[in-house]
Length: 175
Ligand SMILES: Cc1cc2nc3c(=O)[nH]c(=O)nc-3n(C[C@H](O)[C@H](O)[C@H](O)COP(=O)(O)OP(=O)(O)OC[C@H]3O[C@@H](n4cnc5c(N)ncnc54)[C@H](O)[C@@H]3O)c2cc1C
Image (cartoon, rainbow, N blue to C red):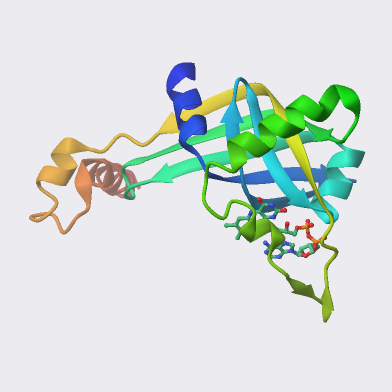
């Protein structure tokens, strides 16, 4: 996908998967997000992901749109986590995060819902953050028009699948 098409997908996204890593251990969580001007904005309760992103601000974010097994698009972002504290120079960015996120109804609910872990309700302190986007790549599945057109006759296998089958039949014939 072009950079522009990838950015347009990021701008439509309401849900993303944020991956962070600590001492070699990756950790991924679903989160509400809002894109604006090369940044992702989010709202979070305090917990493992925030502790880990504070320790190591390098993150990876996945956003996708899946229409069917052939018709999909996904964008992967590498970026840097920044906490939007109440420090004077960050107040406007915090407000901006709120303005962007609150355009979606009950935007805070998935993050702020009470959850119980090992029998204990988790901490319900919350904060805002943003991710500075440093690298973007976008891939789109290309629906196989010919394969779709004859999917009834071929049991839905499609041209690409027959190509693979053809190759493995050829390989077994070579043996
Ligand atoms: C659709 C959706 C949207 C969400 N949006 C937000 C959001 O905007 N902001 C936000 O803060 N949270 C959001 N959440 C919840 C989020 O995914 C985390 O579950 C939550 O924030 C706690 O993460 P934590 O790292 O603080 O976990 P902690 O409370 O510190 O718990 C640590 C342990 O709990 C387990 N754990 C944590 N979260 C999950 C999970 N989702 N599934 C399975 N195991 C888990 C992990 O094993 C982890 O090691 C959303 C969840 C969903 C499903």
